Amino acid sequence: MNATINLEKKHFPVLLNELISIISPLYGGTFIDCTFGQGGYSEKILENNKNNVIALDRDKDVLTSVSKLKAKFKNRFQFYNLKFSQLDKIKIKDNKLKGIIFDLGYSFNQIKNSQKGLSFTDRGKLNMKMGINDFSANDIISNMEEKNLSKVFKVFGDERYSKKIAKEIVKKRNEKNINTEDLVQIIDNIKKYQKTKIHNSTKVFQALRILVNKEISELINALVNSFNLVPIGGIIAVVTFHSIEDKIVKFFFKHYSEQRNASRYLPEAKLSEKCFNLINKKAILPSNSEIRQNPPSRSAKLRYGIKTNNKCDFTEFREKFKNLTDVEALR
Image (cartoon, rainbow, N blue to C red; front, side, top):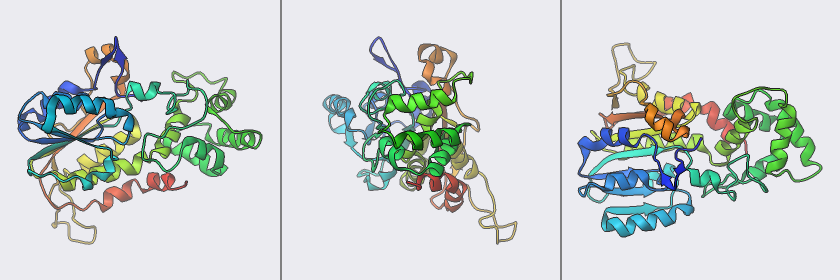
């Protein structure tokens, strides 16, 4: 699901007002924008001249927007062409880091870039690489064995017909290299009598995109690295767009904002200290007016936590979603 959309050549970062209201009490410091995109969040934060922004993005296509912000805000803006899981490479010189933010959606420009091949409306070779990738969707469709293809479609796309689609892909690829149109046709042929509100190919394309960009392990590692980097009192805020992402982020904040046994082998009275304070227990959702202006925002959810403790063991967090990272490792 894309996070932003252009209407009359305008750019609309999702839940921007809500995010700014969360971090505004912390104005006067450094913020890390882990998903720069077209720079909507970064620019808004930099409007306060007491703020600095360090931005990251794995996609080099954002460099035009990066140049504009560098020219406008000079030394208050820095950019790194890194995946957000590489947050541990960032050094904060002034020790004034106040918050780390993520917008996990894809921008309208990315969706409409046919070379990236993120959309089932594109034509030609399958791709889906967002930068700093090891393989493409074409590599997956051309080489992954049938049972693993099926598992990817089922786990990352919740695709009901995952086995049939995987079987047909393996059959067809023996005849020719499968491109975007071919994959859409394969799925349409299998699901032609199914009546759904979404396009037949949506779930398979989502699953491929997640695998190609390692979105699950990227997110898990980024959240852990964010905790290690942000100081006590700092905020980590995340906007998600699909249920898998939201389950991960929800568990990360909720589980570690509760006192619980430090270990299952210790007495009940031995409780771990909370790692986060949650002001909003539930996700913050877009307003009706935002959804009317930008329909793709309807699936967005904003969750955030305020760090309260420097010591936190995330072993349980990683174990909780090991089934997902194991599927990512099938390639």
